[in-house]
Length: 328
Length: 253
Image (cartoon, rainbow over all chains, first blue to last red; front, top):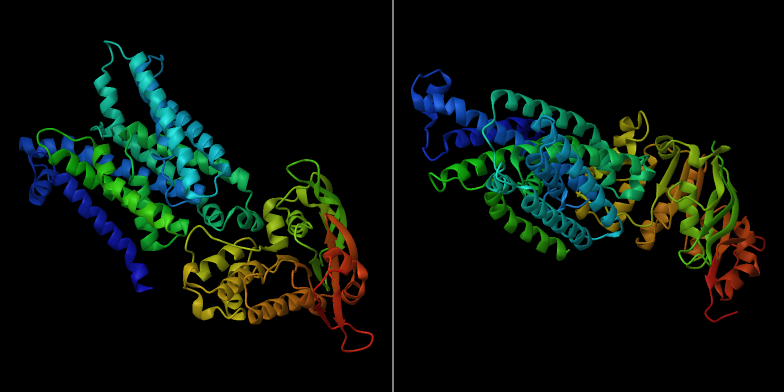
């Protein structure tokens, strides 16, 4: 029990280490002492840039990572499959179509509202589509093939929209770099809104814990233990789509974090979702903080898209898991 | 004291030409262990799933104490009807305690009974062991504890000892027999010898219809049993008026 009791402190410490790494990383590395001086109000230009630009950026990265970790845990619970992930199953792709339309089509409503609303609609529709198609698929391969097919279709639609809708007034480059995944430095107001959305996502996710636990026993046993499975799945997909939509709207298409974070969390705190959901969110935050730090510092002064780094790290992880699962 | 009743249940096959259940009517009351028997494909598991509210019949109704099961909220159904499936494969590597706690989560106050349920099923030392590291017998006991911890007034068990060795199977049936003293228990059984020995009442299903329903002895002695399974049973009785052992003789009747 002492180990269990120490886990939140250990997690907070690890998250703090990731935060410090991300704050130090950049094409100009800062030392921990520079951070302390900057936070204490050092008037030096470098210190002010650190507070004004890097700090909101890394906080946004952490929050987006938390959403990815949370979304991954919800998806794996809904699909009862450790290889389910919003990016691989097309849900993030659905959100990306909504976001692409919001970015490229003048809709006459505030862009942040359009981006959020259409991302949510896209993620929700895509998740329902995969859930419907994968309904008869009882094995991992069936589910993944359904997800890959939906993701491929959505990718084609997104590319078509990008080609058809972009003009001189909207840079294709901007949309393209967004789809590769990356955190933009937000305003403090924007960061506040993101923090509120993450809080809402967590508040909506935690009540799903018992239902997700029961679903893990199998659909029949979950129903036998009194879960209204159809209604619960609709609710869980709605919450999952919300989580994915906010993550995509703020961070573009960032794959594999939603796969890796729940795995580490399950290994650490076990499969019960009451602990798994928040811990997966915290681990997702740590992963994106580190990957975003690497994205800003590996090839100075250029910045590598965040999605490329997470895919490079997550792809092999996914293949190892797939191989292990196929071997049974 | 819950009475579970089925009235004229019909469940069709996918080909829409034949029926899995073809007008099954049935009533079970507390105090007697009811065994559902029949050849493969007779519709036993489908009937049990309909009785548990896990499958919806195309026609007919299932009632619990006179209330249609379909109208009961899922939470109440889960609290009042325990269902022990033929096979159980959790997606995650839950510990024994987690599975029993999830079973307890369906009834208020049942969480307090988790330690007693673990103890009663010989699982106290295995409580923190993950599912993947349990033997077949331990898994069966853990699932039974998860189902019974909520003390449902109705228990439906689908071939609960199918994957167990004879010792564990006998132990499981002994527990179900004890539970049936005060509650409604229906169990699907393939082992006819055990069914005759342990059940108070046997219901014989064949091609979606109930062809025989009576005391275990009456069913065991009926020639309908031989006709349904297509073999001649050799009946061994320890007392003149009582059939306590039923053994099979090879060859068709």
